[in-house]
Length: 504
Ligand SMILES: O=P(O)(O)OC[C@H]1O[C@H](O)[C@H](O)[C@@H](O)[C@@H]1O
Image 1 (cartoon, rainbow, N blue to C red):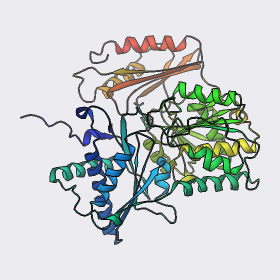
Image 2: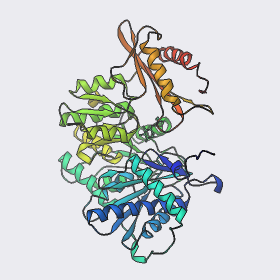
Image 3: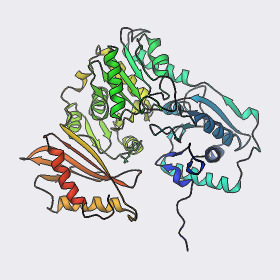
Image 4: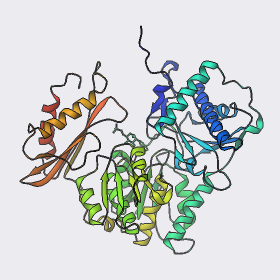
């Protein structure tokens, strides 16, 4: 008997998102227009079932997209798929939008959609696209995405995605981004407390990387008095001709640092394509991304929520823990994956901030929503209050001298659970006395295995080996406060990994 591989729909699942190739040779395209239509159809039907149970009538779903070249076509298909789910299903085209705004459209008065779909593949190349789903309860979980994809597969099998029900009343367009921008503006006005032009005198450069974030300069900052001249790549362009829209990317960060310096700005803000992530640069060019952004956001939130817990992903620096503790907080270094981080935070009393080094950051005060624009707003409010001095916010936080991330792929034939097996071995290696002197298991290990490297009894660095969340590979992270330290640790790791035949 031939074993069944994963279905074409289930292969589109990437954690709590749908992702695939949307452009290219037909045989390479996995996220076809037809599949998007069937997936949206399945989402609408699932919402309909839920609405039926709750005794409410009708399902209204908003559809937004980032600047990708395939965005409009796929959005049109998603709209049809929703309308085809029944006469009581209506689809609203929200046009160019951001991922967090799509969630906000489900809870904002006057819109209150039953659900929303965002077409985006975040920072991935121009030929990819994807789908994110929201209801008023938040972003859908991994298990719900599996449920939708299974149902979509059935829709395809039954060929039920025809034009049977689509009537003109079921397809409309609506404008939500101006409402969302006004929510952000009101927050800045209220928090800075300096009238209706609280950003007058501040020069802020925005880099939207040709994604969906251009509205932030024109509709949020400028109306509040900020000078946004010098902003760059605000025009949506799905070929992303300037740099990868990704605040984790070194070239992207250099680009905004250059823009801040050339235009003598007080601040720079950079977004990823769909604006669920952001980073900031101060007037001296200091980058607030990764650990430093977490430190800054921790300082802000712990001031307002004393003694709170900050949940982060697993690859954060030891110095970040020290910093959070120095501000009276507790650092829970959890797992990679923004959903993991946010869901963990929801379980904890007094957890104001859940944030990843990738730049996904959510706050309990903002619906536990990872919103890059909201995080930028928090940093801008702080900059306005402190007359631009963001460096003072992270006083005492030190970046490590060296840091490295290495991704080690599994070769063909690697058995199921290979990553877990290697990680378990690494744990035994560290705990069984085979590791070099000074390698001690870290206090908390929620994912993979992390060791602290001590030198003369003093913490010098750390190493973490973990299975990647989405890919068949191991990720090794190492940081050291000693020059040459990372190279030393990596020699140990490479010698350890050498014996595994399925690692390339
Ligand atoms: O495990 P990795 O391969 O490093 O990927 C993990 C990362 O994947 C995506 O980028 C998600 O948006 C992040 O939330 C997550 O942390």
